[in-house]
Image 1 (cartoon, rainbow, N blue to C red):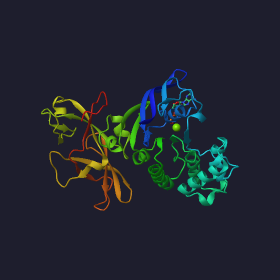
Image 2: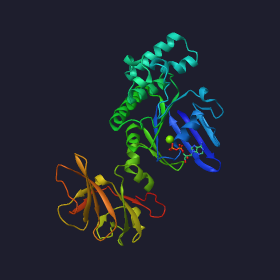
Image 3: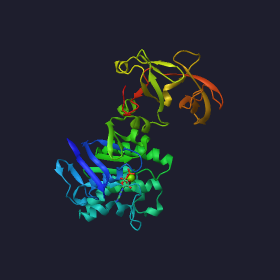
Image 4: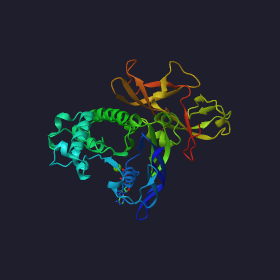
Length: 361
Ligand code: ADP
Ligand code: MG
């Protein structure tokens, strides 16, 4: 059963449409992540679901009950924000207990639920502290505790980790994933961070300008992006896009320099001689030891050393097009100005229509 259903949801401010005819079903116990660039409508979406904004059109169902007109407090949703919004004058215990107190739960029940939540989150020793006596990670954990303690039907997460430094973010990501595995509360998590999205999601929806471009498992989205937008957004460094064409035989992709990358698929036979956008991920490009019809050269113009691997930025000789590839450092380090010969891994090519920007194969 879907726990949260959004049907033809719309939101506009004045005559600017922020959320356009949005449809989504989040299944019971699922962690669904909505990922998209800043300003694409993620927070607006969550605020509509939480009841902090009024919808301009469409319906919101929680457990089959239409909640459009319900007050936020009656929707049994808990939201975790980027800025933790803890009460500064209250202890950790009281911050976590606040929602239950307001709902007039018995004292013993509150004490028990806060203690249980604190132990799940490793906050037992901090219950008497005030927020200013906590680190950023601890504060974020309290904010989550406050949400968990209420046993809501649905968790909404609005970029909860974006104020933390990189190490802490990676650590909290793992904690949220573990927590979800333990609690199995239906969750909708929005972020602009694609690593967070890939690692946390059971299913992933890629949002572009208030509309879902693609929805699927992280692996599906990564391996078969449905559009150039999705392909370019998911993956770091992003997928390379090259202007190419289908050869006259209809069995290979021809790069500007004449390189022919064999491509055996019926989908391209109908596009003989036509332009195509070729997508290759940086990790799918390999060094070649000798020249060949399916090899190409690039001139290195920048090298980023990441320790275990290096990102090589190159340019095609006699062409303005550039390419980024990822190579292990242990084989050989490369230098600016070097010319190297490359090939691509079989079955790693993505093709997009130059006009519609949609996936061809
Ligand atoms: P995201 O969370 O994906 O970064 P938001 O949902 O915060 O994006 O905002 C989406 C768009 O809606 C932005 O262009 C923003 O300027 C606009 N917006 C958000 N809230 C309001 C508002 N109260 N009035 C007018 N425009 C708004
Ligand atoms: Mg936002």
